[in-house]
Image (tube, rainbow, N blue to C red; front, side, top):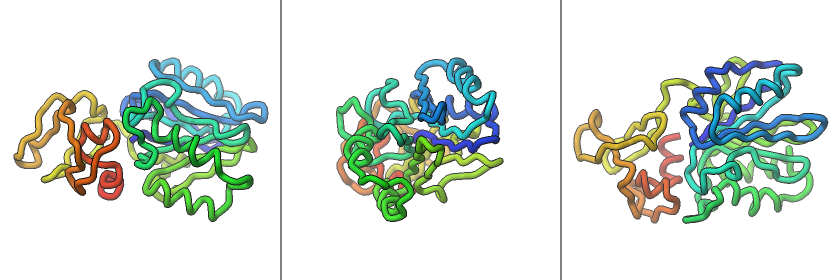
Length: 251
């Protein structure tokens, strides 16, 4: 489900915190900040060491406002192109935490967020940034997801800010910055807790008490075990729950 982070100017982020984010969301990371009056975006797919080194190089002198994102792929290819943040135009960039079902295209190499950028954000009218009506529409569109926008002036806009967590001056879109963290997905019978990296699962589903119920990653589903709707993305088929049911009940 990823994590988005807003670090205001003058506030520090510990290496171990970003390491937790990297390990809990292992499909690439990126950050954006204002440098020489332009939005600078940096992405890294494989090495936390490289990511941290570049982050330190950009923030060590002035400690500016930074927006960061760590990805778990729910749709689209695992590559730098699908890593956040994304440029919308020369003046605006953003990252997203959540799933946008209408944009999750089956078998597409592009993620739902990438499609959202192209189909929706790049077609917004001029002056949309900070417009309360547009913000409300975006809130409705992403449901319980969160969007973090940055303007080349340095302004930051967080859609569904109230659904995140603020700790020591930093805003987090969820709790995967913590070391002991698990994702929860529903089944016909019980909620199921996944370890920080759900791709490492190798056990099987049983109709057994909650304490011993786990799911095998290779078992695919065609319809949502909660609402019965058809599943769209590979991650939905793997976990047996659609994005709407996951966001309604487990975020």
